[in-house]
Amino acid sequence: MVSLGIYEKALPATDSWLERLQLVKQLGFNFLELSIDESDERLARLQWTKAQRAEVRDAIWATGVRIHTLMLSGQRRFPLGSADASIREKSLTMLYQAIDLASDLGIRNIQLAGYDVYYERKTVLSREYFVENLAKGVAYAAGKEIMLDIETMDDRFINSLQKIRDIKAQIHSPWLQAYPDVGNLTAWPTNDVAHELELGLDNIVSVHLKDTQPVTATSDGQFRDVPFGDGTVDFEGCLRTLKRLDYQGAFTIEMWTEKAADPIKEVQLAKEYFDDLFVKVGLTQEVAHA
Image (cartoon, helix red, strand yellow):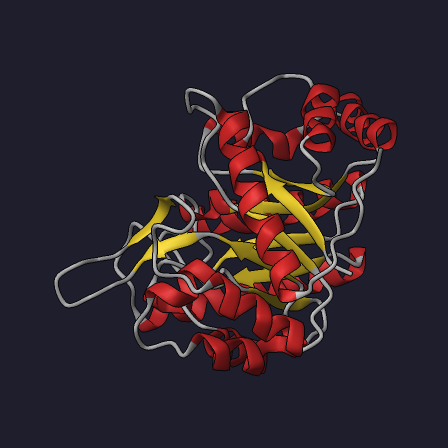
């Protein structure tokens, strides 16, 4: 039995959490993945008041729709490995705030983007800062029993499950795990995707479903906004591999269609695409709450 969720940024924008989660239910998903990205608007969520947090909790209880994961992609703007000490301090504070927020909302996982730095030059020192600060975050998360999950990225720093295992070898904790994105894994020609999933199974807490175009000698690839089926991800192969490995966790459809002409239609089409694939490979979805 697996659960299927949708990324918040796939849905039309609304200020009402009750409306947002009602829509998630109507679309037939089990859960929502919350976004805290680089924008000031979403970064402000890290400082939500008790009343704002209560509104989200009440909406979860009223609808029966879970929020499984908090995606902390805002650390791309404020990375743990920055050469600037003030940015590193802000990044670590953001991580602590995200852990506290997840604890208050009943969110189990915080997905971390696997970047030491994004807009800065990568160095041995940026990697070391990243590992040192991640270790501090893992220790804080362990105290709250919140899982930190590193995503395989559109960046060479952590673009495979093997590299996540390498980081875990430096930070020994059950509270640090892996969140593979099958699109990102596929886009890097150095990855054997099936072997990566086999290698990393014991650390996988959730899986992103996203299509991509590959990195080549003449192209940096395309890591988002590729319609499902138009990229090079072998979704059936990935799902069959996970089925054989007895993976029974969560899958999230990752889309950025909140500003599309008809985002609901886009999401419906994506869900139909994966519903058919799940049936084809024999993965049984958790029934969405009525």
